[in-house]
Amino acid sequence: MVYLERAVYLLSRWSDRVAQGALVTIMLLIVGNVLLRIAWEPILGTYDLVSFLGAVLISFALAHCAVQKGHVAVGVVVERLSQRTQAITDSITGILSVGVFAMIGWQCIVYATKLWQGNVLSYTLLVPYFPLVYGVGFGCIILSLVLLVGFFKSVAKAVKK
Image (cartoon, one colour):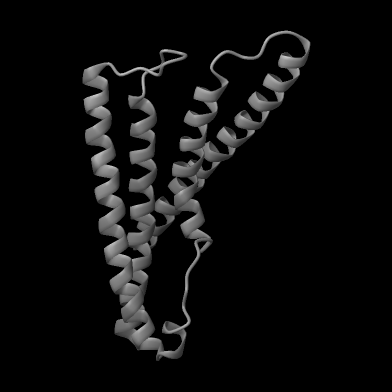
């Protein structure tokens, strides 16, 4: 269990580094576009590139945010329950979350394969969409692995108490 947790957390940290790189690239692209628009001509396809990088940013940052417990959680009712009941509630919501994000990741991979086979391209830059959708699916699968580790911890806590 410790090895799985360590591997998943390292994978989430790696994906967060990719998201950080996407954020820096977005910032540089927008600043460069503004400066070039003033001095000469804007960068062609800035809107497409920022949209693509925004999807990479969000999908690759999800898992590390979950590791850091950075997602919003409303616990007004659950906090008043016993520790064991809280652990059981966390286990139920955890396994449901794993299922949802694993399914989203799987469907993104299915959709990306269809985009690849259909040779679907962006309008401005004529860049294929499928690598981006594969990346979103990969980010959701990493998030589901993080949630799975959290589920195992919640079950252990529920059984222990």
